[in-house]
View (cartoon, rainbow, N blue to C red):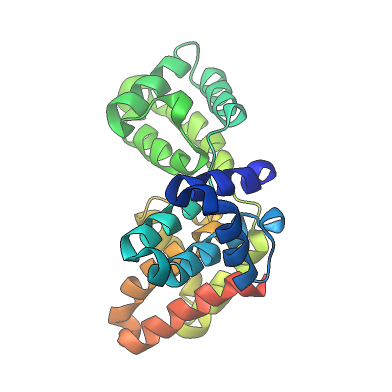
Length: 233
């Protein structure tokens, strides 16, 4: 995914601003002290936030918002290899009808074709399998597939997740780990799948979740501490 990120970024920005994409992208990247060629998914949230803030005066709020959203979408790419791994897991653990089961589930419940499923859609597919698998393919086969499905959702950013728990625990106390894990689960994203590309989303969700416990000021400070992990990488 990261290998083609520079090209996808340019195409995404060009889709919003046209031929000025190269110059605008270089300028936005300079604000976060990177060049377009060195950007990876960990920087996309900061780059999108910069676009929304800096481009508004020049392009207007609506276009700046579209630009930010286009940049964020570059973090996930539909991968034939990813789809093949999902299908292989279904065939191995569900049986010969495993692929058909997943294709029907994607079409009926997620309103997307399996071949169009992006890696960030895996948690939603896993939820659908958990809800309907027992009735359609049996509990044993559902459980076997879910073991593999959870593996497909694991992000390599384990050090980041440790920092997230440490940051939340400083505010919430010893229950910090359980607090953030339950928050992610309720939002449909296993904590093990959280990476740098999710930090801005997680900070916003945490601000709302923690407000009753910490108050608005404390929850806002906690969210800011999570967002600050983007630049501590």
